[in-house]
Image 1 (spheres, rainbow, N blue to C red):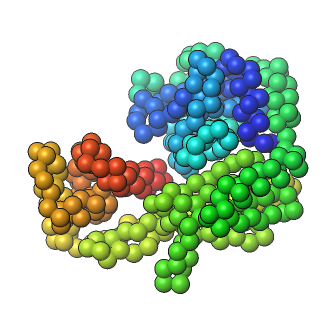
Image 2 (cartoon, helix red, strand yellow):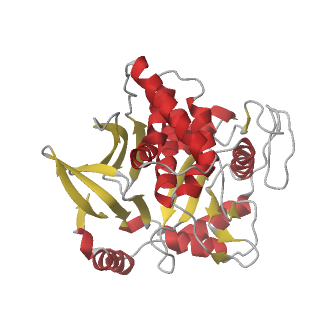
Image 3 (tube, helix red, strand yellow):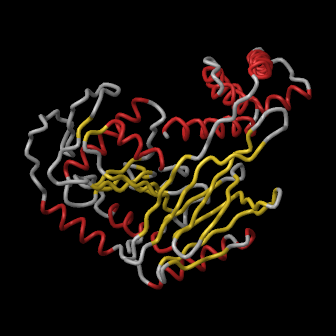
Length: 379
């Protein structure tokens, strides 16, 4: 199996970007321009390397080639984006790779691109930003080509990529070092490990709490040691962990509701399935079903939220009960949006700079609401 940390180091050793790998300081697929540029790179790398993997490394300072890291990123949205905008889309996998010198909240993002077929060309399916539907991109430039264009395979790329991947193969020392590092670094969070299919070593840890006979974890670190692939859930997240001989499953919940009558609702399920042929697969699916509330009650809460925003805009001092209401503002705007309030989402966006200025905590609640919205939107 490939040690992804070694793979990144071997790719960076080439220094200059080329036709089978690209490096970025960060990506932004929350806006049209960022989506369009990301799709262009995916399209170009897929078309330029139909017979081998291509890679994008995220969290690299381009001039110095220094590994600076980025925030954790949820990969479940990328394949949905690719399928929505690309004709003959490649298979995409985004993985969060930890590095020892980075802080615990930073990783390097590794995007692996593999064309589904050597006989097809990946193209934009529809317009996005300044790129037109039908456009075809190659690594040597952004050029619109007709779909009958004959793709010339780059045999030298296949040999180079194969050599790089072979030099990144795992061994028992890397595996054992990874397990001991994880257990030592997270000993305050009851670390555990399990071996799947006599090969894969999975380590995880988290802060445990029991609610009505159900066990949840927050501040969760999960690491597939063989691949140096990491999953992370923050102190605001609450997840359930289930595993058997073949599968490790993480079910993420959201504490969702009105007037302190919250319920734990399933948000998303990530399953890591292990096979006898030393292969594994990570699959994520949305489980969230937005709750429906009485419209009269929601109108009352919606108006309270709007009044709070006006106070923040004019920098008026909030009363104690208003400070408590402010903590619920992002999630209640989101509930209103799910229940058909057309302007609730706009108001939530208006609240972003105001909540950020008010306190780090209120801004973290805004980001949590937006994270839920993104998951629901892309799925």
